[in-house]
Length: 78
Image (tube, rainbow, N blue to C red; front, side, top):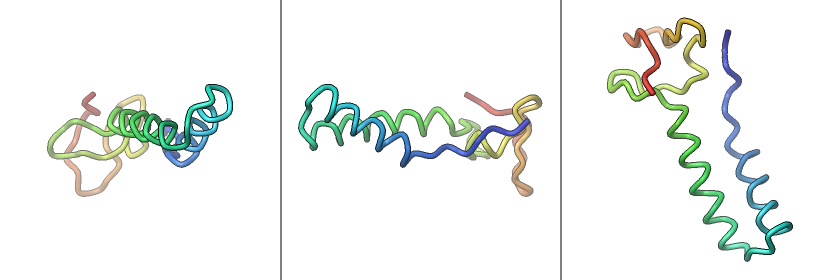
């Protein structure tokens, strides 16, 4: 089973609008918070194997084998 590709723009826009509309933060502060959250979420979805460094959507979820042809990653490393 493959994971859906991570859409950072959708997450970023949702966070900015939430903090501006609901929390009444300034645009700059909302952008800063959104950048921080998107950066963390992106890092969570990257394989920590030094030889791989591909996103989770490039791995098969059940066996966690990397789908990139030249990659020798056998398991997604968190």
